[in-house]
Amino acid sequence: MNFKLQIWRQKDRQSKGKLVDYEARDISPDASLLEMLDIVNEGLLLKGETPIAFDSDCREGICGTCSLNVNGEAHGCDHPGAVCELYMRRFRDGQKIIIEPFRLRSFPIVKDLVVDRSALDRIVQAGGFVSARAGSAPEANSILIPKQDADLSMEAAACIGCGACAAACPNASAMLFTAAKVSHLSLLPQGNPERTSRVLKMVNAMDAEGFGNCTNTYECEAVCPAEISASFIAKLNREYIRANWHTSGAE
Amino acid sequence: MIVAITGIILILFVVGHLLGNLQIFLGPDWINSYSEHLRELGPLLWAIRIFLLATVIVHIYVTIRLAIANRRARPKSYIDKENVKATFASRHMVMSGLIVLAFIIYHLAHFTFRKTDPRFGLLKLDPLNRYDVYSMMVYGFQNYVVSGFYVFALFLLFLHLSHGSSSFFQSLGLNNKKLEPRLALGGRIFAWLLFIGYASIPVAILLGLIKPAQQL
Ligand code: HEM
Ligand code: SF4
Ligand code: FES
Image (cartoon, rainbow over all chains, first blue to last red):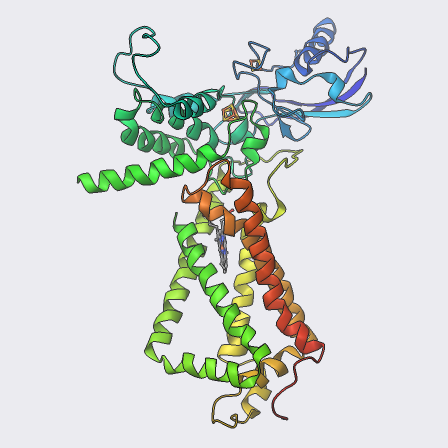
């Protein structure tokens, strides 16, 4: 298959950057979009040009490293799935494909399609952990957890931290990510003791990173490769209101 | 939170106001006495008005600040952006809200302070010595431009509330996976009902179904 590509090229953090036209020829329909970029890059290297920088690691949808906006959608048109799982058979032969980096203030562009998503790490560092030593995996039935809670917690824990939610959100809000990270711990007994302080610290960290505010457009859940439901945002709102209530009572 | 709570108060007002206005279909006696009762509230009516005004101001102040912060959060927008799930209504809350605001100001000048239509001063009291709200509404809406703007603003209110009236549940955390699609549908139906209810009045008047109770 052949494609007309328009790809964002930007030399470094400071420079302006622009869309540049490329051609991709003789691509297998079973190649992923990232493999197609690899092939284009080989061609660029042979011509002595700088290859297009983009992020990827596992290439099987579990690490959350790949992060591209393809034809206007975070991770491309094949939802749910990360862009490493987007195959060229999803496109028409000869189709124009525009590839841009995730665009938001909290994810500054490092080079070409690579953005710095450490803002998400700092949200987790603010409280997305359990302080007590958890030791090695305990005997499965030593702590009893209701099945619904365990399932819901696992659902939230599926978040791979790719940042597509914030990238797709019309307000550049990272609520879905934060909601997933707060929920999967607060639902379990191990996470319960720090439930109140965790949500306050993580929401404050999220605001401090300069993300926008959620207005419930649900664009995030539509692009999330891990199918995190926006109902976790309702849960985050609940946790946040509860935590504010508790701390105001304590003073 | 603040947006949701002020939004709910405004929704309650909009519903109450609609129920009041629909009394026009029951004839002049109903709506004129309704309006008389409202005015008899005296200071309480003013308290309600000031409360609503404060609510509107807070709602707008907070939402505009949020909207500015959201714009800052994405200094450079995408060259190419598709919306997979976000509706038109949800992406244009500020636009629909501000046009509704312009309408509210005009609407108050029109029917509350009666500054835009000199004919309203010519209206005689009704047989029971009450201000003839019924005839005022009919004369007001007989003008196509007035009615047109009214219906247009209502349509934007419909847009605003087709997102807002389910969105506030989510903001207050009163939502889950099962409820979500039902709330979204319920919110949209609610917004349509409001639109149809309000729009029925000028439409009925323009079709000549409701005639003034007195000649000017
Ligand atoms: C008069 C000017 C108004 C402006 C500028 C305005 C603006 C906004 C904005 C920007 C939002 C937040 C966006 C979002 O949640 O997606 C919002 C939400 C909302 N508005 Fe308004 N609005 C106005 C009037 C009204 C009126 C008259 C009502 C009620 C009848 C109303 C009810 C709501 C509700 C219920 C929400 C959702 C709250 C939430 O989800 O937290 N608004 N408004
Ligand atoms: S919630 Fe979904 S879209 Fe957001 S970071 Fe996690 S996996 Fe990515
Ligand atoms: S490269 Fe790991 S999720 Fe795409």
